[in-house]
Length: 187
Image (cartoon, rainbow, N blue to C red; front, side, top):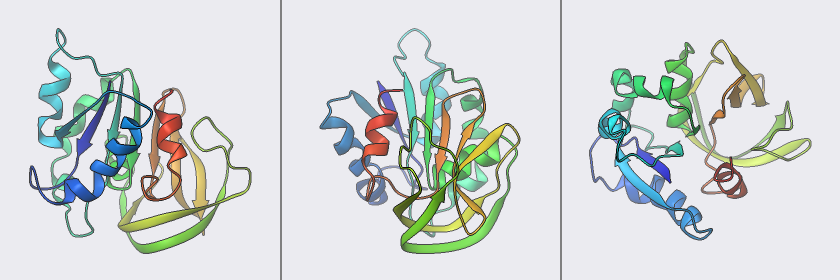
C-alpha cells in the first residue's frame, strides 16, 4: 500500500482535492492500493506496527501560502526510520530536505519549466531535459547524503538519498509527467 500524506494545514481542506486526489487517481488507475492521511497523523499511522501495511509514502504538495508543515517538522521525524520508498512532491521535497539537513530558500516558480537531468535513475528516465509544472514559493538545498538528479539554473529540482529510495521532486508530476508517480509505485 502507498500512503498518501496530505500536507495541507487544515485536515479535509479543499487543497486535498487539488494536490492529493490527482496522485490518488494516477495510482488507482494502475491499480495500487492507497490510503490518504493528514501529516499530523503520520507518526501515529506508522507507529501501528501490527496493522500498518505501508510499503511506500508519497508526501503530496500543498497550496502556495499553506506552509503549516514547515513549522511541524517533528511530525515527520518518523520518516527517518521508514524502510520503504518515499517520494516528496514540492512541499514534500521541502520536508525530506529539511528533515535530513537541507535549508528552505525563497524561490517562487509557477508554470512550465524545462530543466536539465543530472543523473538518469529509476524514477526519472529522460535523457537530457524534462518539462515540468512548478508551483512553489520555496526550494530546499540538497542535504548531506543526497545526490541531485535534476537541476534548473543551478538549483535542485529533484534529488535522491544515496542509500535509500527516498526522492524529492520540486515540480508536480501529478500535473505533468505522471509516469514518475507510476514508476515510483514499482519501487
